[in-house]
Image (cartoon, rainbow, N blue to C red; front, side, top):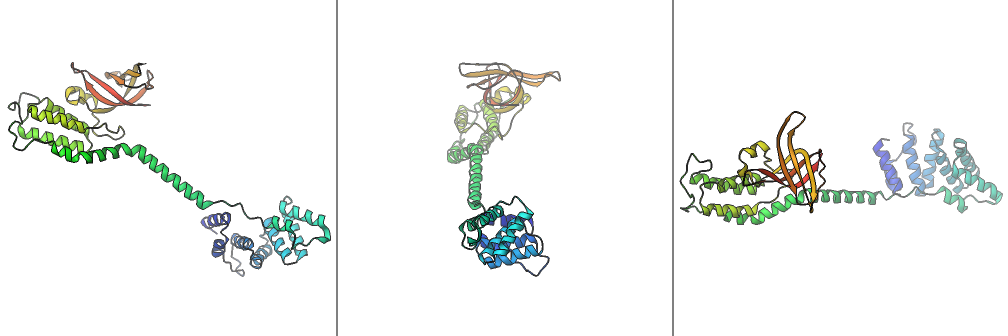
Length: 360
């Protein structure tokens, strides 16, 4: 018998599904190649189904092959007792003790027979019947498997709820506002798209077609969950020669932005990129790794400096102030990743409004 067959028989045995065991352990009693495990499984299932003649044939075959275990002898002894073969029954119980002197069932039954003496009727004795026919411990495998499956399903649903709900909420919200976003547009025949003529000498000076393209691209980026790129485009329009009418629509468009999921948000700009054009990146979200310094918590807020770079290698890119609007554990001289929103002051200094602190 293979491992899978043995496992199935174990499950059926402790689920008291003996008919299933009989269906897969039909034996050719004249075939010397039949395994002892298969013969024993069939005998045991037949025994618990009270098919005693069938069980007896299989147990006697195990005895003949010298493969019988002490428990095989105990069950065979009970069958002999039922068939009014007292001598064979006692010999079988003694044989069980001969193989294993600590076989409790055989020891108790023989002691009981000795106590009762000649008066005992093996076939009718309730003590012998209870000891011999005690079934395997019932284990509700189906309920356990169903419970485990339900538990796994709940765990998966909880994992999905925790990890995917923010994204799902965003998708639902964007879908809900999709029609509203589509209404935020620069009219095709709007004559006041530009506030001034394009000037190649100015950094954020565009032609009308470029303004329209940047505006539409910003909407597309919002719909594709790439809010950071949308913010950059909208900031460029804010500082450009676009008309006040266009800029007011840009501000309205910003109302569709959401806080991204730190684990997979798009366009995580590095410090050097932002430093080159700070104002354009005002409001984008970043996830930066650095060393914590000068950490302090007061009035329900935590602030510290995030040191970017590698001090051990002899260079520091920047030391940026970080503020959390709630207390967080930020120990000095430890390393962490900070997820937060870039804020640019009037003098073009960069700071971070912290959202999540992920300590190394």
